[in-house]
Amino acid sequence: MSTFIVISVFLLGLIVGSFLNVVIYRMPRGLSVVKPRSYCTKCGHKIRWYENIPVLSYIFLRGKCSSCGEKISVRYPLIEILTGLAAVAAYLKWGLTVDFIFNFLFLSLLIAITFIDIDFKIIPDELNLVGFFLGIVYSFFRHDFSVFDAFLGAVVGAGFLFLIGYLYFKFKGIEGLGFGDVKLMAFIGTYLGWFGSLFTIFFGSLLGAIVGITVAYIKGEKNKNRYEIPFGPFLATGAAIYLFFGERIREWYFG
Ligand SMILES: [Zn+2]
Image: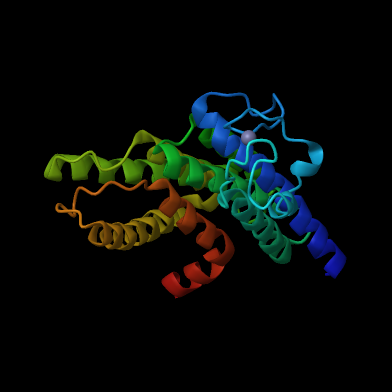
């Protein structure tokens, strides 16, 4: 492992993160993610190439559009850095291998899904579908995992979450989760298998409950059961944890 490769992988992650920012902004608005070139969302100023360098441009523009002075959200460079760190983490675990490519794509999709779900409370079908397809293709390259495991993971993940949502609705009369979350679990399941799917749902539910209750108290919400927060980000977090620590979690669980 050389420092040069780690830095290169981090830079690759920053560039992918910059693209994820475009996806996060445009996809839920029904805009093309490939054209036109990036522009200021307030004045329409076309972003020049040197204003579009991940993280650095944000710093030298001091977080403002060079044309109209509109504030640029600090979330843009943070998502780039997060994606850069995801790339480095994937490299440190898998090296420059096929596993690195597929798992880094997995993490990138989870990042895009997380922030779209936070902004719009939806998960685009396109992202779940691309992820599902990648998970199936990846299963042919894996030695720990067959295409059967991938499909089983999808069925168990989506089925179990659907069942929870159904029971929740039946007994509490509350539409607790959307179909986007169920489809997200089908995607995640193709990567993590049936046990990873179940871990993701349990972990995501636990984390979601903790965060949901905390946020409800801070905001002084009266009915704490009904406070609505998107579920996708918690499932994504659980999935990312299982991706990196799955072996240890399995050892701990199965003894
Ligand atoms: Zn502007």
